[in-house]
Length: 401
Image 1 (cartoon, rainbow, N blue to C red):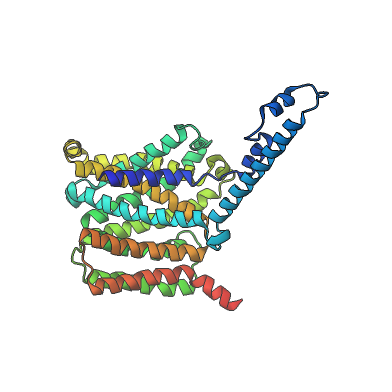
Image 2 (image 1 turned 45 degrees about the vertical axis):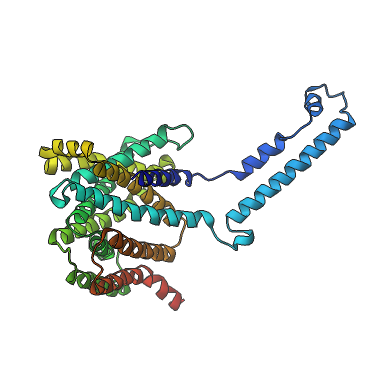
């Protein structure tokens, strides 16, 4: 458990640290202006009157120091080039690969720690809404910490009107998270992930009929494949529950609304500049989502919160996995956002597909969930259909070009 917490903190720290772009030009300029190795006589000469000549010894020392520093700058530049994909690494984008690795790692461990916390508190009959809200609360605390810590992350300069415009996105975000957590509490994580892979079907319907953004005929033809895969996976699901299926579908609906509302939000003039960064946008959404989750917790589980507090204090399985899952959730989502911002549409589709396969199979093995061949076949068909749905328009555009 201690290892899980340590890995969680490392991921959350990476999510904020990797968002900072190093200013290499500034470093070089500073080094040139203030040589690191300089003879004392040269230092005195700098502060003497302009009419005093430096001695030959001082000149030689200064020249030697400048040469040493120039070599150091060149060496560090070469090292930086290699780390960004130059030199012997042959074009690899190391920061981007690190984003992907930590994103997948965070998603994998979130699903495990989340399920362990849910099982320890009684599953669907226990405290799924409380756990989902506290996960957002833990992420909110981490986001606030980054704003308060020196030199960690610049605070956003948003207005009250900006906050009001963010409310629909935050509401859908909280709804999607709460429904997902309930789905995982009622059934297996692998089954919930398979159903959640069908989100494009919900997004297509909303885009076409609610937001008046037509979806291509090719994409519509991909949806029966996705839905068929989900149905096939459900046939042999040993831990099948109607409530798990329905809540996963509700999560998809909220997620589809969130995607469309977020696009509308980012069209607000000057909002990106006032937010300052992708990390700030996610932190603000998490904080607002947490506040909106509180009434749901009080309505569904408010009468037994005293029991939950006692369980949290006496059972380390609950406390450790709850805290870890909250940090994992915040960290991997922020890293996912930054990763997808740096990639193209096809890369995003491949990345999301690979992530779901890794999580479904990996978590099922760790938690001992069923991996019936029929379930795996349905999983492959459904996720394959999602992948084709994501890239079909680009493929047809290239073919017609």
